[in-house]
Image 1 (cartoon, rainbow, N blue to C red):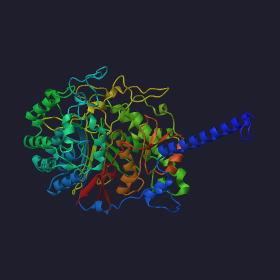
Image 2 (cartoon, rainbow, N blue to C red):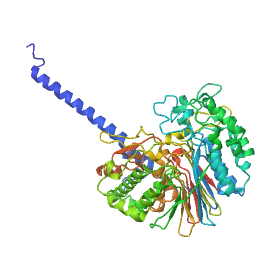
Image 3 (cartoon, rainbow, N blue to C red):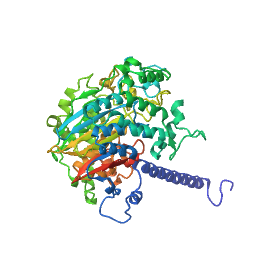
Image 4 (cartoon, one colour):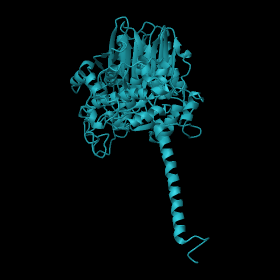
Length: 618
């Protein structure tokens, strides 16, 4: 019959066809689910086994192996940052009899050359200094400030300027004013001596590593002509790559002028005039000579918090620094009395260890909710927030009572009221000297290469710190049912400093001896990177290398997800999913923690492998 083929009726053939289609669709959906799961949950267990070097059955959860830290153990002093050349320069300053502040300044100048994407004299920073002999901390805020013409609505419906790129994104740089202030108070070597190694480095050139070269390839098209020329091979016309040499001739000359004339030339002299001339040629100038003349660093009251678990004291800066949020996280968690057994790798302890990480995530969420009410303490009253929410006796127990071990909650549960800006760049410098002094400094130009603009006369790469302010009509997060309003405490005002995640921290014991110097780079993820490094060493009993290298989690409440790094055990990821967490595999802008710690009679310096850093010491 015409309607039959090979003995099958048309109805039978239709049924078979439908069955085949359903099977194919099922296979496609199954494959898609596997792919999505692999993307969201990271590498499979075999990949983790390969990383750890263990390919046999074990009764423990597999964490990645930690490199031998014997080369990072020193007797007297150590410097840790993102570049080995710069760490070595800092150690050289200490060996010449310089103070920890001398070493930090020399390292900062070096990073402005070797890590120009993250630091430089076109940006600013925070420093936490601890004098062991006097047992006194000193903290300085030299973050960049909004210019005089700035206001909270300056970017709204304004196509002439942007807060994240070009001349209109630049805030008044503070690094030179801040480092000079610190040198005047605590420096021992001549100011000019601190510039000499970096001048030589800028003139002879630095070798691009894979980390910087990767960013360069992605961002090159957004650079202005001056910045493009620096990173272009003059012979081939191609973008420079890993292993190529980059020379900063103009910046070397700028360093010479500052070394010889001091900060006056930058803020009140001939270099200031050149800076203003450079800015006039950019797209959307907002900074003028009066802005540079009026810039002043801010001496802040050190923010100190005592932990009962271990008897440690944390020292950092108040807002606009993120140090207060790091301390809030640890204050909440202090009551759990964590020990090494809190993160037992035993298979039978998987639920218990996952609960420990759940408690950390929940504390982080409460901390970030409170951060969204903070701003520059010179412009907004943050004393009530700090006095109530960051006082462990008044508030931490109340928060712990709100943390339920069985599940997480929706965003509103944590008391969030406003948005929080997200950032990317920064460099961390951690120093412990032979006499027990400690310096923790975080510097930044904000995004990678800041405004993407370089001064034609000065070679200065200018920041884009204006993007760190909140704006009245631009909440950074929303979902189908709720929008986080803009944080008015962080709105733009002339002379104001934007809220920051930078959290340079020093930890001392009950005798006043330094235990740890730490901080982070990586924008809004700095806070969790710093907090987890502290928790890993102080409470979980890890040595500093393991504390820094251990794969991390990150949450900042908005967006309401939890990021986990490659190599973080999937056994714990699965348990956290059961508690309602939206787990996402973390692949970009991985934060780094460059730290120095004391272990028995030795000093250990650890620069984070995530950004190819390297420590040095003697």
